[in-house]
Image 1: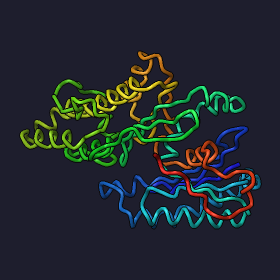
Image 2: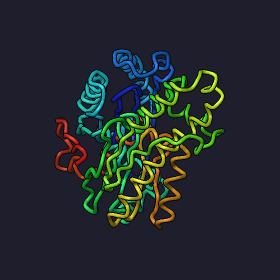
Image 3: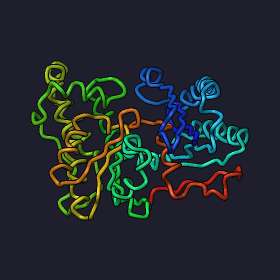
Image 4: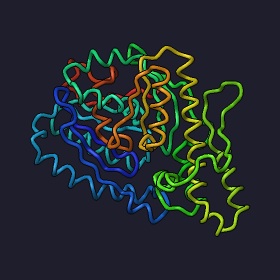
Amino acid sequence: MILALESSCDETALAVFDPARGLTLELVHSQIALHERYGGVVPDLATREHLRNLPPLLRRLRESAEWSGITAVAVTHGPGLAGCLAIGLAAAKALALERRVPLLGVNHLRGHAWSPFIAVHEAEPAAFASRRDDLLPHLGLIVSGGNTLLFEINRTRRLSVLSSTRDDAAGEALDKGAKLLGLGYPGGPLIEQRAAAGRPDAYAFPRGIQPNGDLSFSFSGLKTSLRYLVEKLSTAEVTAHLDDLCASYQQAVIDALVKKTAAALDRGHYASVGMSGGVANNTTLRAALATMAREKGIPFHAAQPQHTGDNAGMIAFAAWCDPAGCTPDERHTLTIQPGLALG
């Protein structure tokens, strides 16, 4: 059983994963309400809140049935905010020493990469090992506030990056777009809410798709296009057409993500395609990618809503799935085993 801690940004989280049963405990304390006042994450405040919120979660862990069965501790070692990561690492080291079990460092993006398979494991834990191999090679899309990239997990479970963003991440573009439109934080969900009542073809925004077939993403031009449009409109016009603006802006992001993913699928031979990261919780995007995959006859797996944002469940699961994890001969060491960076 693997205990995992995640503290890379503004979520304090821990989880316990049992290979025979799946995730048996998941605890998360969110700081969204705090950072909403400032329109984004404030690193110093995030660090302070981790110090405040982690001890109560650890007390709940110690009171649970899972505490006595833990045989390894995993922790996010990056990327993320330095102060926030340091708190999770310090706590994980102490817990591993107390339990006298190995300590595993897991790359945050690697956690997102494996998260679509959590639901596959939960459906049939005993058969997951064979089912996982049937889903490889796998093409994945990580789409969040800080990252937008396409990657591959090959038959040997090695991860490699195929493309990333040249500038803004998709989630960052949505958040900045929401700010330009006078919406709050986090911007992506608020744009999605308003977009539900709008027309996605009301305004023509750029898609950032290069004619030479380049798979890299670019969203800065889209953000700039929205800024120029808003500057031309009066406050009353923006308010009157807010739903259409949100729907059209969101659709431009979705089109770029879906078309680049489809192009990557056409260039390789994949057994499955998946999506993870905070923006993966957008229902319109999930539906568009699912439709594209169905049309190409490829199974589609998206991370469950509770595993799209920062969470410890995906860290525990990646520590178990990842071939870079501890071998049985290392079970009694207390050193940090570095997780492999994507690529």
